[in-house]
Amino acid sequence: MSQAFLEAVRPLLGPTALKTAPDALEAFAVDWRKRYVGKPLAVLLPETTEQVAAIVRLANEHRVALVPQGGNTGLSGGATPDASGSQVVLSLSRLTRIRHQDSDNKTLTVEAGVTLQQVQEAADAMGLLFPLSLGSEGSATIGGNLATNAGGTGVLRYGNARDLCLGVEVVTATGEIWNGLRGLRKDNTGYDLRDLFVGSEGTLGLITAAVVKLFPKPAAVMTALARVGGPADALRLLQLAQAQCDAALTGFEFMSSVSTGLVVEYFPDVARHGAQMIGGQDGKPGYPTVLLEISHPESQEAATTMLDRLMEKALEEGVVQDASVAQSVAQAKALWHLRETITLSAAEDGPHIKHDIALPISSLVTFIAAMDQEMQSAYPGIRLINFGHFGDGNLHYNVAPPPALAAGKTKTERHQIFKDFLQTHEDTIRKMVHDRVVAMNGSISAEHGLGQLRRDEAKRYKSAVEQNLMKTIKTALDPNGILNPGKVL
Ligand SMILES: Cc1cc2nc3c(=O)[nH]c(=O)nc-3n(C[C@H](O)[C@H](O)[C@H](O)COP(=O)(O)OP(=O)(O)OC[C@H]3O[C@@H](n4cnc5c(N)ncnc54)[C@H](O)[C@@H]3O)c2cc1C
Image 1 (cartoon, rainbow, N blue to C red):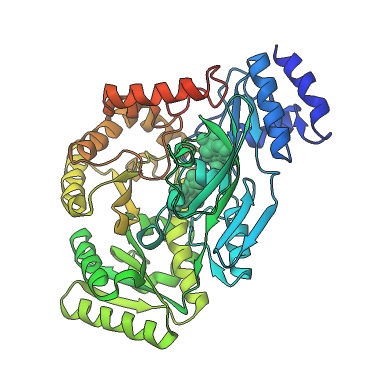
Image 2 (cartoon, rainbow, N blue to C red; image 1 turned 30 degrees about the vertical axis):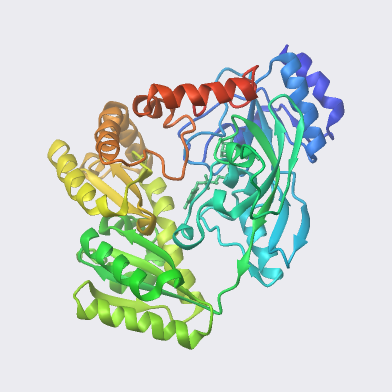
């Protein structure tokens, strides 16, 4: 059946768009964190929506499962095929046209495979701003961003990918094309199908193009790195910043000393830029910090005054112990790079237990204090790599094995030791964290999605009613179970 499918698909695509050679499949078979390794039957790289639709129709005919993939930067294993050798990766990365620019409507219509960075650059060339921003933006695609409802650093002011999308074009799970590319800010004409596909992680339909919302560019953007006593101070600083800056506050990231300590250890050149605030160098203690961004619509002067006033007040009230304001775009970029390098540093350190939790902002401090205590008493020496989009109530509360376990070992040995630790303790630790999150009315996936990593966890916490509604939608839209089986549900 599978070979017959490939033979049927072959004439639809160009010679380089159907890959079956093992070495050509490798990059598509493993996720970014190298946690999941699949065995695809083939990889298909169509270039048009019509080709995608034809592939899906044939997949239904031959009952072949398709695993959609964009930039393959997802952190939940959603784009990785299983190990059966029967699933086909359908990469949307060659749908790369920018179809339409509308400056007056402040929208861009782009195909799914355009990278997030290219969307930002296209908006910039129009004199506008596309504010979605992620550490992976050079490779992540807009299709993947929408399929995962990506968050990132600008959610506080601009919302997540869902809020930035006005319309989508979708190839349905049965191979029809739905053109929902409407650039409308108001449209109450029945069920919101767009929102059904956004965040569905490739299980309900294939997003082939989207209309995204652009904003006026701020006149000035200022970035500061502030040393705080801990999460309680971070929360007070957030309240102060929101009171004083209101909508001009566009970024608010918390970084624990353990998380920046990883950057100091593995990427010292990157850490150098925030050295004075984060500490942790030459055996000295590290400090928790907040990375804060102000975007002002008027002028550089107005932005500087706003940020200076905020920092003065925060210092005066003892909320902040020290602060450094970036004096140039290059300095601001270096501070953001520090923040974004935490994920890379963690990958270098070895396998960690990742959490992507959301809580009401008012519960963050209590959660962290109680969770830290519970973890440290259950697993003495464990490292809590707590950082994230604090201003949205989103923490990456990651847990790493005690470093003593791998003292004096090579990198390969360390990774193996940490892998073994995860095998023994991951389920228990994950349950400890998620039980507390759910008890505090939080979410076990703020922005990375369920994929295969959190699929079973979601089953544990979602009510039967919610699970049944989700299954009903899946069965109605994908009756043959062709799209991304084994993910989300
Ligand atoms: C260094 C780093 C930093 C990151 N920072 C953030 C962050 O701050 N916030 C955040 O939210 N995420 C972050 N991520 C995670 C990741 O970049 C996002 O989830 C991103 O949106 C995935 O896009 P992608 O194109 O790589 O999708 P992929 O990884 O290829 O796919 C992700 C999911 O979407 C599905 N999919 C992909 N394209 C389509 C399509 N066109 N139609 C239907 N389904 C599709 C796949 O089947 C899969 O389920 C980060 C990742 C890295 C590596």
